[in-house]
Image (cartoon, rainbow, N blue to C red; front, side, top):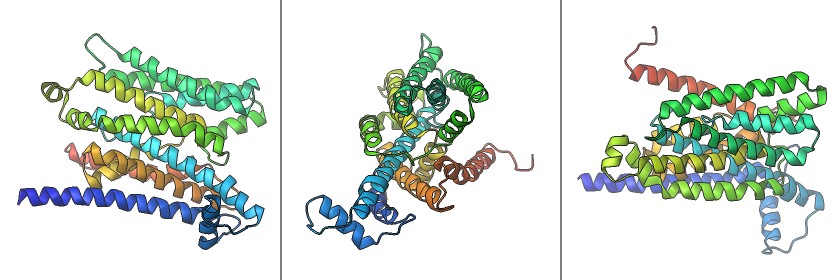
Length: 349
């Protein structure tokens, strides 16, 4: 009986991941047709097949340009960033055994914002925003790690406190830069802080892709170790897991992924918090399935969020970070109330 139940759960998890993949493909095709210029589903398929050399039909250059040079790179970048932030959040929640953990707990977002703001106010040019934000984000993650490190390991509480302190420091520095910036510079910094995908291009896709891919594969390799860490450090050590080594590796991979995402699109919050938690409620805590489910769920969520951002007030576009916050805050409050109830408090206290 128990064996049949286990087999059913296994089949459900695999089926659920395949369904998510199908939904992602359908999401791409649907969102390619949505915008100020509507393009039919059949036309989109024909253009994509023609580009792959399967179809030989000739299309107007404007239609091909909209699909292949404007919408497709934006959607692919949203997929990469959504998947990257979500899989990073999933790993951090597992590592800290806390559903409130996110990819930004080590101060990466604030550090990236400072790097971008510094480039904007220095007049170096938009080209330098991505590499500069990435370097400062990644350097900050390592700095927080070494700040929290002790001879016996990395206390989770110390790591979180160090991350919070560094976040406040960089937030203050960004506020100072905003204060001294002129009107044009201030607008650029504020838009970057809100997170946006309208500057997406194939160059950014190519830049982000290797970081998200290698980082996600690395986390997938560590999925069994993450499962054992869920039992507690002492139990994991008794089962042969080098907890501190795994913790260092996971933090490095998460920083690797998150820094590239933040550098490319700005600060897009709540994706790495709410999606892994939803996937965990549906598919369970096994990281072998939870990590790919979170990646697919985050990709789907951010593509649809960006579609809303560019159409809800058309022809004006909203920063996608506004949409993710509007959708994410209510769920975050739900998590807080649920956690409060589990701890034995009533909502009225």
